Image (cartoon, rainbow over the protein chains, first blue to last red):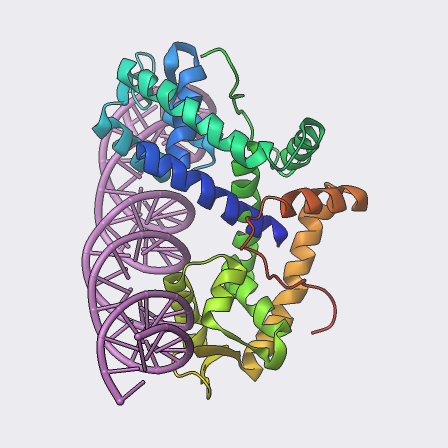
Length: 145
Length: 145
DNA sequence: CCGCTATACTTGCGGTGTCAACTATCCTAG
DNA sequence: CTAGGATAGTTGACACCGCAAGTATAGCGG
């Protein structure tokens, strides 16, 4: 139960700031992260859906938005006509880099002020165990780009 | 980021079961809990909203549903005509008791299989710190009723 | 080569929740 | 006692997301 409260409170804070500063949802940002770190900056929509834990229709609609903004494009798959890739554009990458800066700062301000690094590690490890077997396949959100 | 994943995965699991077994949302259940433990089994809508971290309009709509089902009624406040109470009915209490059994079992099956009691305590304490100053005012969900 | 099943994706519909605007009531200062 | 501002609650418009159903492609067994 405390879990629900924590989540509601946290996403409220973070998404409000993201939204205000860049007009992005947390899920939008999550998708940008996944794409930015993916090989060739593209992913199949199904895989993307699994990474961010959205249903297929959720991904379609979320990407509709990102495509309208020009951050993402559709890409065809030569070997399988069923699949469509979501491809991060140059402007999308630029957008991501810009957003990342303020978002990491936001996160820092929320978590940094409440936890030290051991606690963060502990929290992250505990949370990781809540994922169901097939969920994972997530990309870490650190330095490179 | 792992936090979002954990939440999505967890609520997916729990709410699917709750939904399937009793036609209730996690938030619906949360409200039932708050009311069941409140004095006279009633709360002002504002306070309720704060407890479950919903906006005022969110509470109105959630309670609309519960009222239609007959679990909750509106109650007037003699000393202040602006406030409306949400009152848990007898049938609502009965419903809550029934749901509680299976929901606690669901929780047990998700958390119990992944954490021992120390870890649970640690997790709960860490999550508690994410709440913003004014959020709290939550009721624990244990035994009595 | 023909059907069959499985997979990738989209679309219509409905639920849930937010925000902004509005009403009604309360309370305090002058 | 009245004007102003705060507080409780509702409503309308809208965003987001899941489910179920539909389309298109893939790939396999006969």
